[in-house]
Structures are given as structure tokens and as C-alpha cells.
Image (tube, rainbow over all chains, first blue to last red; front, side, top):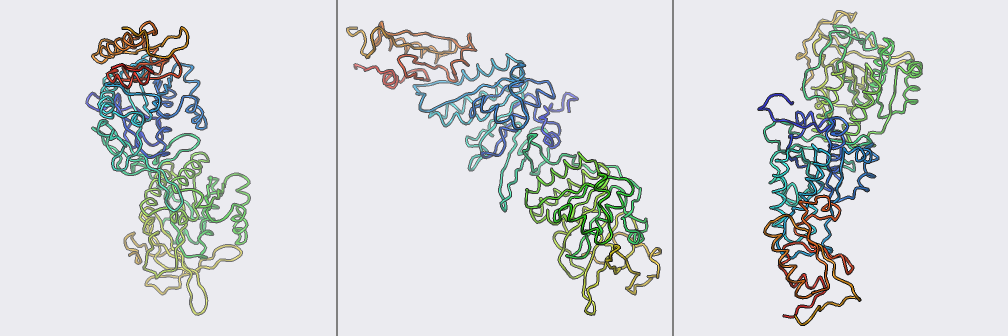
Length: 498
Length: 103
């Protein structure tokens, strides 16, 4: 982002994801306001801006704290792996704690904030700082009566910072009607970032939004973000573009009889497959087939199980003749189980990301993805899945999601399906219906992007030796006894989509 | 003139004051005038007044935790007290310094 004269220069924050959303960082040499309610992560974000500046961009920084003493600050961020003391010793960081106690100060006439200017100037010059944080300057207001003076002085301070050419982050507490209590957003016109911390259905979610970024395009959505042992990371971690490369290679579904229903003989590598069905329709079994298929190709599989523990999954699959154990042992298959309600949606997403980046699988299975969907709102889930799929596609990972749906009329799509189905490339539907006093399982392919597929509804049974797909039973037009020659139906020609 | 001081001080103790100003600014000058007038009038012979320009001594501003200019700090007698502003509010300062005004 640092090319050309007429392009707004940006200072990378070093915060995962934030630089992507802002197209390179915060405005270079200008103030940026970060506002949010108490506990929304303002200070941590600001500290990270300084720490990353020091460690990654060799830009010293000054932290002016109006709330926490230097010692408190150092201790509080130590858990995030930020060693402030070392930076201070190396003259890369300077912390100045400014405290105004109403009871200790008497106002006796007109004054200015020149003392603060001098201290800040001195601190900046003493270490050659390029980055400055003021956290939270509004605290001054609680210590003083004459807010008119403060206002004009703070305005002057921001102008001075601009002249000084330091990239500054100013934090501000969220006000009731305005972004900050004292309306600082009026003075900082360059870039305003809003942090939000909400608890919905007892699950806490953090969000970040770029309210304003003068002279620059930026993502306008609310982005979930996380604070974990590595500091702040904003999702998306990946880019927002559809630029991933695609593969023409076809991989097995793991079940030969199912392969035959696809004209290409399987799924495309690096695509997302969705398997939906009501409870007991053998979704997990199909997922396990896919996992096994991948393992047989010596490709690593990461299996996220939200309903069963790894042992349980291995045992249950063994009961239908699918032996996952050797692959778990040889570390080709990693099963990760967690409760969906353990975290908020984004925490799940981040842990998915982390596991994916660490384990580097070629295949990822999420069983079932519907459990994640239940913990977020529709828009959130959609955004999250889109990001997840971006990551998967970027890494050329083939993915399979199962999703629990309730028994519905055949041409009915649930909300869940609606949310995911447009994002996935292949969609296999499973059913379990009553026919003449017998429950019969059946499957059909709802869609398969870029590949013709059978349009039959095929019954199948689950035996000790796995799934056996029966020959076509629906007396459809051209169905033959063997399934290889099934007529290709173009993607949009699928019959049952609403 | 008649009273040396109308503040109660222990034997030989003086009121120790530091005034932090910023160069020749108007409010700095006003603050100097106001405090010297007050001191000579009410604390004659019983005060030490130091005037410090923090433009020239920026590190002092940090050491003494100065944010506002002008700032007057009473170091002694304890407790330490801080006044900010051009010190035009004589009543408030006198009260804070323990001086009884005689007008």
C-alpha cells in the first residue's frame, strides 16, 4: 500500500485480519479512533498496534496511559506474550502514565494541556517514535470541571499529532448516544473503528466495524474478532476475494457406489460437499467414507466432530465396517471433538482455522455443521461459512459438511440448507422415510457444480460392512439397471430445489 | 505589610511552592504575577517559590507528573497540593494554601 504519491499511506497494525479489512492498516501519520464499551478490547488492540510496530516494522512507540499504570499494563499484556519491559529497555517503547484525580487538583482559572504536549513530544523524540497510543484520553474529563478547555485542547492535540506525523491510536469509551462519551469522533475524522462486545444467548461475541475511513475503501461489515493468547485477530483471516485456484482433479467420495452417481466419478478436489438428512440417515457414515477415502490416498484428514467424541466415532464407525483406527494411529486422521455451545461462533471458526493451519489437512470434515448454525444468527453463520470456505479453497482442501435437517416434504428447504446450500459445490440429500411399514433410507444428489450427476433417488441400506446402495427403484424415465450410465442433469435442472 | 504571615507554620518551616509554566504564554505570565503577589502579601519571608519552564525542562514535566499548564504544586507543608490554571481564583488558592485573606 505504500506506492504512489496520491495513494493514502497506511500503517499496518499487525493485527491479523484488520489490515486486510482496511486495505493495509490505519492512516499513516494520522490519528485513528478506536471506540467501544468497557472490556471490548480497545487497550489490547492498541497495545498490539505498538508491539507489532516494534517487532515487525521496527517502529518505536509511545503509550500514554490515562487508566492503567505502567506496571499494571505490563502485567496485563504479559499473558498475551507481549514483553513490554524488554521493549522499554531497548528504547523501543515508552509508557507514560497520566493520572488526574479530581480530589487532588484544584482548578484556579484558565489553563491548557501544554504539559501533556511537552511530555508526549519528549517521549516521542526520545525514542524516535512513529506510533503513539492515547488510552483513554477521555479519562481527563472525569477529573476536571472545565470541559470546554479540555475539548479545545484535545482538538489541538490531535492537530498537533497530525503535524508531528505519528500514526496514533486514540481509544474512547462508547457513549450512550455517540460513539464516544465526549464526542471525540468529531475531532478524529480520518479513521474510526468501533469495537463491540455482546452477549447473545449467553455466548459472548466480539465484533469490529470500520465506521469511517477517509480517503480509503474498507470492508463495511461487522467482523467478529477474538482475543486469545496471541492477542487480537479479526476474521476474516483470509482475503475477501474469490481468487482461489480450482482443480479439475476428481477424488473419490470414499464409497464406490456413490461415485457412480456422479458423471465425473466423485467430487472435485478442493470443493465443499454438503450432506443433509434427518437424524439417523447415515450422514456421519458417509462422512467417514469420505475420510477413509482420503486416508487411503495418504491425504491427511481433519475431522471436526460436534456430537461424538473421537473414541465414540471410531467405535460407531467400526460397527458398520469402517475402520478408522489405523489412520488415527498413523496420524493421517485427526478427530477433534468439541461442544458447539462451548464457544461463540467465531471462536469455533478461529479454532477451525488454527487446526487447519497447524495440521495442514487435504480433507476437512465438519460433522455436523448444523450444530454450529444453531449458535449463531443466520447472517453470522453465512458470513462465517463463507470465510471458512474461503480458507478451505485457498488451501485446496476438500471439505465435507453434514447437516441435520428435520423430515420435510421433499421440495422444502430449511433455513439451514438455504444458508449453506448456495455456498457448497455438491449437495447430497439423505432421507429416511416410511414405506409400507418399513423405514427406508434413500439418497439423491441435489446439485453438483460443474459436473453432471444422476437424478435418481436411490435406496440404500446400512450393513455391518457399510452402505450398500441399491439399484434404481424409482421407475424414472431412463433409469437402467446399472447406475453408470445415468443421464446427466445440468446443475440447474435439479428437480427439487425451491 | 504589618503581618509577616498569617499562616500557621512550624518553627522555621516555609511554604514550598513550585510553579510550572510554559514559556512566555499569557496564562503563564498571569500565573506568575498572581502567585508572587499572593506570596509577598501573605507569606512574606515564609515561602520558597520556584518557577520552572517545562519547555526548557521537558523531563521535569514527566517526573512531576505535570499535564496542565500552569501548575502550582505545594510541596510543603504536607499534604502535597496541586493547583492548575492562571491562579486568578485567589480565594480558592488561599483556602488551599491555608492563608486567611484579610480583605
